[in-house]
Image (cartoon, rainbow, N blue to C red; front, top):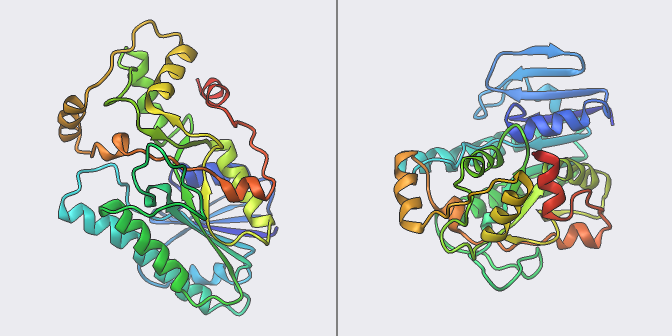
Length: 302
């Protein structure tokens, strides 16, 4: 590949992808709200994620466009934050759609972020791309509107895939570092009743799965980006305790989680919703995980 464009490539997952691809492609374009700069074969271009600007020229003749844009959901769901969460995803997707539609030589592939939270809270049924059941609530509304906007874009020459990603485990960002720190200070017990399912993927397999999708023309529409087997919250925290050899693991009850969430201005849904999601399409198409089991994944990150 000659050129990949990553919209919002300065966040945690954008950096994971940049690191993975920087020695595999001639040029990486990062669309960022920050200042433009060049670091080797990585070119940072300013955009506002709302309007078409000069950055559109880099979309033309790109091999791949990856959109990682979206305001963090790690906040209280008041109306202001809800509007920002929704609009940041919808607007960026629309404006990229306009840029792709205007290309003389459009990207071969467009991968757009989505979320495994689109599926309903499930303790029993595993949710794959074929038989998974869409849930209800604000987070699900965001995901469904996001995907609807994405697939409405008129890009007949560009293969489109929505990445339904769950928790990506990595050392330098995302959900894992705070969980690891909690565990190390003794608060690494189950959260709530601990029965809620937790779908996850190692950051290396996240990046590898993205490359696999790019190179596999049979994959389109939606795809779950998760490890083969979901854990429970209790099993996840116990495995982390064993890996870090922490002697104490105090559980955190649901009322305490709700109190703490208000203090740090976030929502308990991020912890208590049961995400029972499996990667049917990745497995059926032959993807091989480097970290298929939780213990090996956690050991590589601690």
